[in-house]
Length: 433
Image (cartoon, rainbow, N blue to C red; front, side, top):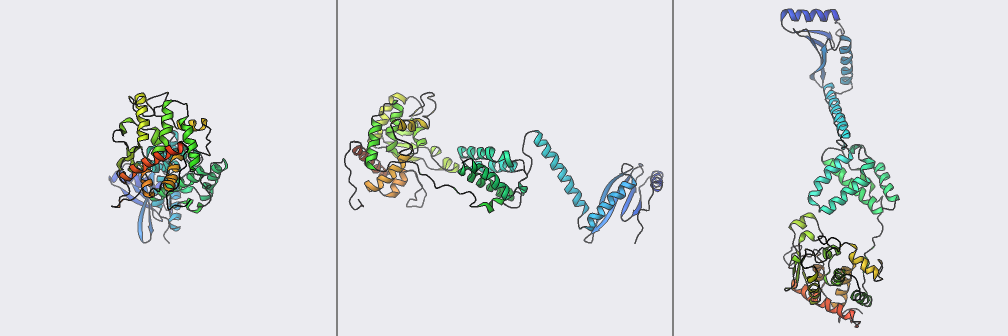
């Protein structure tokens, strides 16, 4: 076995002096692969030669005299120990430097109030920014609020790769315990999407939420209250006729049962969307419910208007027609009527939330128009702006079943008039009583 630790400080100084006199570097060995590269400048470079898997490697251990002989030998022993354990000391050094850089960057970001690299919050925000390109603005805001309020305060600063299924479930249970079961479910779902994004981008190796399926059970969904009994619907229509609120709210209430629309689509109606002479209301795709792509490139929704609906709008037009919105907010006319405008009126008329909602008018029309008027389901679905394939296989187009829907809206409005007057309405022949 070759001798080791054969150098001395005296030998090193002599080598450095000789290199300076000769004007060229010379190498002296301490054994075991440790070599000092003596330079003419009076300094020396410590290097360790080692072998791994039949390959020679070279590791720099610093300069002499900043790194004295004893320290150089200590570094060499540590490096040899790594080699003996099967670890390349050069790779270990690179990993250590990378860790130090990452630690410094994390400290810098923390000082600036920003999430550190590879943390749940950093990856989640990156995922959210990517996904928001295909989401509607409203959905993007809701998802970010969920992350900020229910996940970031608790796990945001933790490295994504360190989070476990039990820990994630603990925080989901915390949300569930306050009665927000659906929020807990959505929090786990969002976390799972973040982890899958993290796997794809090298931040973690797996998604721990895959082992939590079924851990949070959603309650049985409660459908929005809707009137589906013709007699009760007649009572509601008579109450709407007798309502003594503002003309704007009265008109919104009267139009709601006639158009099969969602409350937001109705209250945000703009005069520019209407062709009253042609009895058509064309709602831009951007205002309809759907994903961002559908809002940007999808078809507009055409609503044929029954004569009764046109009459309501013509009566309101002198009051609000000079402005943008058909149903403006009474306090700020440059904004539409609030969500509670129609709901509050229904409550003041004595109809509770368990009886009818603004959204429930859609369910009312969908149920009774099919059952009592014998309208084909696909025509009703088209009027509801649901995705219905046409003869060419397209998911939806703006004129799908337009003539049939004109007939539907007229029959429906006439039917409501009969109910309003208290007339007995008999089911269509061939249908169950």
